[in-house]
Image (cartoon, rainbow, N blue to C red; front, side):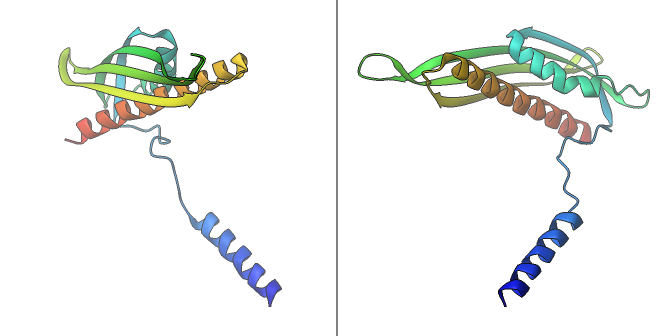
Length: 158
């Protein structure tokens, strides 16, 4: 009885995972628009991640697609949220504030502000703390890039 049950579960698992056509939302690189120009100012680390995310659309050159320019200004802040009894930091918060403008033919058609933040614990190993901060900054910047792409898709659908 136990063997039959485990075989049914295994077969059901294989069937469910192989028949699913899951794709991440932004995995398709065939957008009906392209980024003609990307102007970045502010924090270099945040801008590097956003530029990497948006470059895939920038490279997708096609004459029939709408062309947008994007101006992005980024600010990254790191603050101490709480301290222990000795005054040493216990928790930090990294926040990334982005102001972006989407332009078509030199005219601003959309301007938005995005703020993403994350609270994390201090670590005694400073190298590990730096790695965690880098990962958090990268993840927040990628989420912001996805929001920018999503806003262009929604703008382009109208």
